[in-house]
Length: 316
Ligand SMILES: NC(=O)c1ccc[n+]([C@@H]2O[C@H](COP(=O)([O-])OP(=O)(O)OC[C@H]3O[C@@H](n4cnc5c(N)ncnc54)[C@H](OP(=O)(O)O)[C@@H]3O)[C@@H](O)[C@H]2O)c1
Image 1 (cartoon, protein in one colour):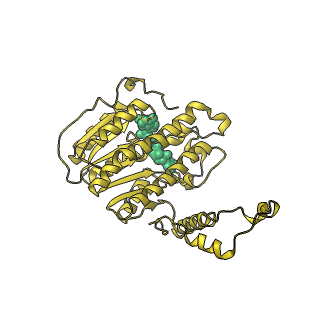
Image 2 (cartoon, protein in one colour; image 1 turned 90 degrees about the vertical axis):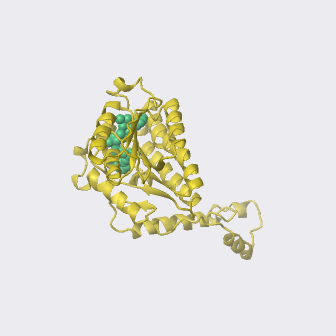
Image 3 (tube, protein in one colour; image 1 turned 30 degrees about the vertical axis):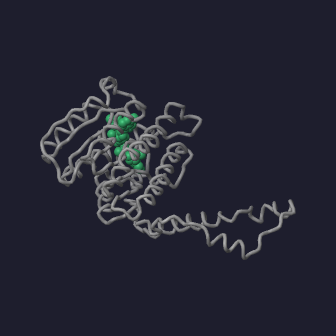
């Protein structure tokens, strides 16, 4: 699924950068992974329109070149491309080093992703590895490539694209949902790491969006409830509006944000409730083993010592 029609660029590596100097942007440079189509390509268009220089990354060099050429002409911004397979360890290392050492980089959109819609038994190791390598490893390595620099400068924007499947699993999405669940927890943790600084970390959780990903995943959009499909432009425009409104978690298609607030508050309450240092009474372990139960006062003081991470419980 991941390598179809890509042989023509398979001998190019992340070292082979094509640089076209046209304009140095005041806003700095936005790195966008997975910019050859779908959500990443719309981010490229919108961020060029906002005046960012761009570094676009994906495997299909011909498409990257065509998109870069168009964006340079339309927006008069500097656009570099890096042809790289982010599931390849050497390419990922080269991309990471390249963006880590580039002082112009002020934003990273970790968008590249891959999916196979199938039960685990029909997924196969290659597709499973591709999802973990691109959705998890590459996103994490590239976050690590930029975030320490952003923190040093006390400035920068990291956008990680998760999914509504970050908090839900289907019988055909165990692996994909697993990778997207990782993105949610990873990104929420990073938000706590940068709390109090001017570094922004946004988690974007799109629902069904009209991109090639569905066909590539083996589940054509035509098979889905047509009313559940959002256009790619609308998804990215909502995500960027969320960024402008200082949302840390953006759910482009969810009208009632109280639903997220409730979910997030329940998550924190559940975590706090787990920190009592003994098994729950329904298991009767304490009774069976004759262990003395801690006094309610001691338990209370333990609860009070729980450190709740400084997430914004409103999710914004
Ligand atoms: N579409 C949806 O309904 C939906 C919903 C929620 C979240 N998302 C997430 O949104 C993000 C973008 O997906 P999309 O829907 O826009 O899908 P898409 O149209 O298939 O785009 C995926 C992008 O990722 C790149 N990519 C895939 N594997 C890569 C690899 N090994 N190395 C480098 N680049 C790679 C592709 O470029 P090349 O093929 O040229 O390498 C392409 O540019 C993903 O993280 C996806 O999980 C999508």
